[in-house]
Every structure is written in C-alpha cells, then in structure tokens.
Image (cartoon, rainbow over all chains, first blue to last red; front, side):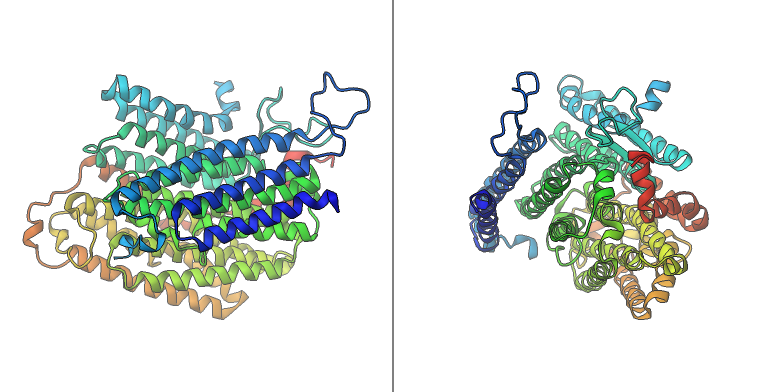
Length: 115
Length: 521
C-alpha cells in the first residue's frame, strides 16, 4: 500500500491538472494546470525508476552488492524539465501579448479569430 | 566522402540544427548573405534527407547508433540496445522525402515573401528548427528521442504561427495550438513511462519484440492515439488546427501540414511497429477508420461555409487527413488476416500512405498560391477578392492545379492515391468508400467556389495595380507543381519505387525488429 502512494498522488495530480485545463477560463491558470501535469509526469518517471534502498547510480564508488535507482528515467525527467521551461515561457509570453492586444486573458473572450 | 555518407542520418539533424543557431549570428554581422545562407542550409538538409531516403530504398533499413564504435550495430549490451539510435526504414524514408521537398520549396518562397518583414533572423532560425524536428521525428528509433523531437516541432511551430501578430489573432491561434500539443506531448511522455516501467527500454524495436496484451499497454496505446491524433489534427482533436493554420504566415502553413503529418507518422509507427499484432487489430483498426470518416465529413462540411480563404484550406487539411486514416485504418483492421491483406489491405495502406505525400505537395501548393494572393492584396476574405486571374496568371494556374489535385481529378496526384483508397476500401466495406467519394465531390465544389470568387470575374478597381509575385515565390510553387503533376502522370512508378517499400515496412513488423536487434533475439 505504502509503495503505491506515489502512484495515487500522480493520478490525483493528473486529474486536478486536467480539470484546471478544461474548466478554468483564466489563461494563466491553464498554464499552471499544464505545469502541474508536467510535474505529475516527472514524478511518475522518477517513481518508476525508484528501487527500495537504492543508491545513486554511480558505478565507480558503489559498494559491493548494492541496489541502484534507475538512471535513465532521471535523465528523461531532466530533459522534460528543460522542455517544460521552454513551453511555459513561450505560453506565458504569448499570454502577455494577448493581454496587451485584447485587454483580457479570459479564454472565452478571445473570439477575434472566429469573426 | 565515405565518412559523410556513413554519417548521413546524423547530418539530417546536425545540418538544420547548427544552421539554425548560426542564422542570428550571420544576421547580426553579415545581413547580406543571410538569405543565401538559409537557402544553402535548407538545400543541404533536404539533400541529406533525399540521399538518406534513396539509400534506404536501395539498400534497406538504415540503422545508425550515436556514439558507438560501429555506427550500424545496435545490440552492444547483452542484446538490449541502450544508445540513442536512428532507425530509418521505408516508411521513415518516405516521410523524409516528403518533408525534404516541401521544406526546400517553402524556403525559396519565404525568402521572397518575408523580404519586407522585420525579425527575419529568428524567424529563419525557428524555421530550420522546425525542419530538424520533423526530420528527427520520422527517423528516430528511440521513443524518448521521438518525444524530444515532437516538442521541438511543437515549440518551433507555435512560435512561427504567432510570428506576425496581426493585432493579436495570430497569437490567439498559436496559443491554442501550443496548449493542445503540449498536453499531447505530456501524454506521449506518460505512455513512454508506462512502457519503460514494464520493459526497461526505450528502443522501439526492442519494445516491439517484447510487446504483449496487458492493461498498461492498452492505456499507453489510448494515450498515444489521442496525443498523436491531436498533433495530426484529426477529428475530434481538430479544433486547434484551423485556428493555427489560418493565422500562420502562408509559407509556414505549408510546412505545418508536414509537421502535423509527422504526428501521423508517429501514430502509424506506434500502431504497426510498436504494437503490431499484439493487440486486437480489428477493434483498433475500426477506431482509426471511424476517426478518419469523422475527419473527412466534419472537415469538409466545416470548410464549405468558410469566408476566410486560409481557414477554408485548413478545414480541408483536416478532411484530407481523414483519407489517410481511412486507408491505413482498413489495412490495420485486416492485419491479422493475410488473405485480406493481400487482396486489399496492402493497397489500402499504399493508398493512405501515398495520400500523405500527395497531400503535403498539393496542400503546400495551395497554401503558397493563396499566400501569394494575400501577399499582393492583403485580403483574406473570399467576399472581397475577385478578378485576380487577369493580373496573377501564374498564381491562378498553380491554384487551379492544386485545387484539381485535392479534388481527385486526373491526371493529378490526388486522383492516383484517392483511386487506390476507393478501390481497396470498397472491397472492405462499400459504405465507407461511398462516403469518401461524396467528400471528394464536396471538396471539388468548395474549391470551384474559391477559384471562381478569387480569380474569375471582371477586373476589380481596387486590384487594378496588383502585380504577379516575385520570381523566387513562383520558383517555390513550381517545385511543388512539378511533383504534383509528375506523381499524377506516373503513379505506378512512384508507388512501386517509394510507396510500396513504405507500406511493406509498416506491414512487416519483424523486419524492423530484425534490422535493429539482429536475428539473435
């Protein structure tokens, strides 16, 4: 049970993130929802690489017979954090331009395209 | 020379990537040669792609292992490949070819059409990044690598869509595209995590060799289909596509079509190579077929009432994506039945894949021609345009060729692939084939309306002084036109030399696995 706690947390986080992205009208909050989803995926990647009593995966100084956590998923997480920063920065700068031009960040009021 | 040829798959990514980061430097210090530099880099990248594709069609699947002593052997750790690996088989080479043609033609067009604009250095840098993203997506053999290139593709694409703000509406379209595709990207990453948790590998060939029918794999498959369907712009995830396509600079929209087809590539790769026969292909095949039919019908019915000329074309892009999904979906539905595959499954597959390259070519041509009209007049609305055929003869001819090709009129390439889809789908289920034909007729009707209201009619006073577009823009359109007509005149040759290998590569999951892992496993 206790070992499954991270997975329950991940499911909850993803659910919350989806609810925010789909239900909130404020664009900044939508970006925050995407941030939460990104963290949930990162947490998932780290969790599947975790091993009970695992140590850092450095072969040269590892004691005999020790268990290591998986290094690949950590590399994936690091990459995803970098990609996430780029995506968030781009989204927020776009929202700034929209606020300047439209005077609102409510997604319901962004209707100029449809006219 | 041999060193260059051996490392071609690395050059595919290295040339556009390095070229992209040098563009702002060159633009800062030597602004005069910037345009020449862009054309050169794009030409070299496309050349690398074409040579790679030719090598694959002649010699079979190409495996390239980054950082290994022998670049073409993957399994160097007890049979489990662990390095970053590029696996370019017939299907990847086919997509490379389509991306190479369109991206080079569009560069010529952009150099002329962006001449008066500001901020060109960053614009071209993003354009080359987008090219690198597309090339990477279609050539990688590693799932995480695929995700990284998908994100490069999405970020560069969204930034390009919003580049000319147009009072904010371009940004509005871009952010919708970006939000949808970022969420899609995270779904892809989550399913990659699900697969890694079970098999401890990211290599597609190794995963494919281990794949079984488990609940987690089904969850991963559903997420893959949803996320890559979003990228490809198929119904019911199509809402961002028309918004982004209609506001992007015209040349960029032509490349965005290829960028979204890279998503389609991912979808087919996951279905056929990664999962293959390990899942219930009939059910999943029907899911793909229904998505295709919905895309076709909803896309074309939404296109009919549009007044904005680029938005109309964007809805047609959704509709045409449906044809590809239909053809390939039928092939997937009969994957477990060798007799049906031989009878019509393979043809359906070839038709669907052939339609991918055809769509990239003629839709690219249409977007460029419409872009030429907007470039000279500055008007989007069909109600205001008219009589341009008098002053823009070349553009009119290009638009007409593109319009006839998309409607499936012989002798253009759209006819060749649509005929293959009609015939094979009719053998599978006649009703589906009839829907496809009706959609085609509606497409023709819609394009005749556009052609008539933009180019026909008397010369309008406000467009009295409109001139033909610059020569480089025409050169870009001519490249695409040559392929549109050429593919339509000799469809058998094209199908035999590039489409059949692509279809065979997807249908034969074992050959992909063997190419990477060797016969030992």
